[in-house]
Image (cartoon, rainbow, N blue to C red; front, side):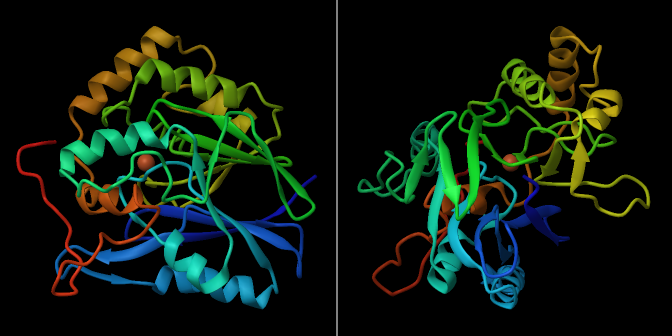
Length: 286
Ligand SMILES: [Fe+2]
């Protein structure tokens, strides 16, 4: 089964969003959609998500799922806005409550903020199988970048979230709360145990030099060429490399705005009594 995968690249956050489906007029899932956010003005826009809407309408697709691979720290999710436009159910990995618990404390969110994942329409269990129309999909638990990361397998396509990036970029950082380099190594090895020609669709690309952004790699290419985790790199060597590298990375520019929206399934925080929604900046907390 080789589903159609339509990618959309957001150059502002280096994020790939996908629509996966079985052809014109069928059901689809939208994966990791982006809500544009300008940190200078505090203004959101839906230009990126509108491209997804236009594609879904042009292909006459019915949206069954809007899937998140994890609570992203570098872009706001357009899941809630897209559900208003197109319908569908918002799904995420079943360990999201642990992430909500950590960040409810960090952001000192309103007492009524639930940390049971109930902002999402569905929490996926490990290895859960679900349908996207006639396509069958499976959830793979791939923690490490965050403790709640999942990948979605649809036929020969796997949407790997922030585990692997293109081979010349490597792997995702593991220094966010609950992240763990050893766990990421094991998650990536699980993905790379799949058949050689499995298509892997990444959530980000940060292309070096003048290379054009790319979204698709294959298992065989990653095993041969991934600069962080090709075959032959041991768990110990990976953990040492990842830990040292993460110690030198700055926080993503949008981590504070992103997380507090994304743990609400892409809803903005509830408006205050003047009707305005506010984001919080915890000082000296991260
Ligand atoms: Fe991420």
